[in-house]
Image (cartoon, rainbow, N blue to C red; front, side):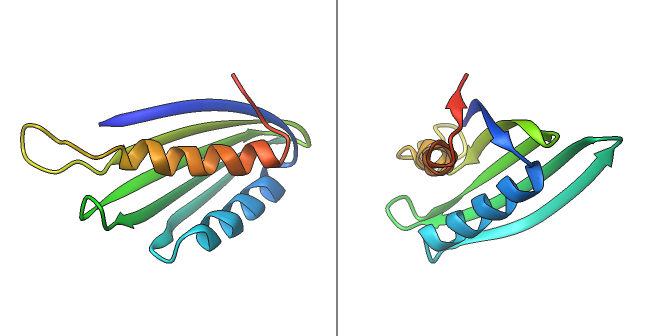
Length: 116
């Protein structure tokens, strides 16, 4: 199972990545930053954040990948929640990946982002 959302906001990708990381990590004890990759091409920045979170209700982990792109000014956030499913064929997740994704969206909206 996977879900995805796109948002647009103002600021610098670096600052947004820092705030988003801090707020997501504070949102749940079981949330961890797996990796962060930063790239800069001219004035443009691309930052990939990969998080993982354990969900007790479904006894599994979900991942959240967030790609922030842009420059000082306009920033785009592409958010993909994945995993969280149990079983080989059914992959029933109790909505873990959507819940994780919504957590990131709520944080971005509090930072002035709008959903596209």
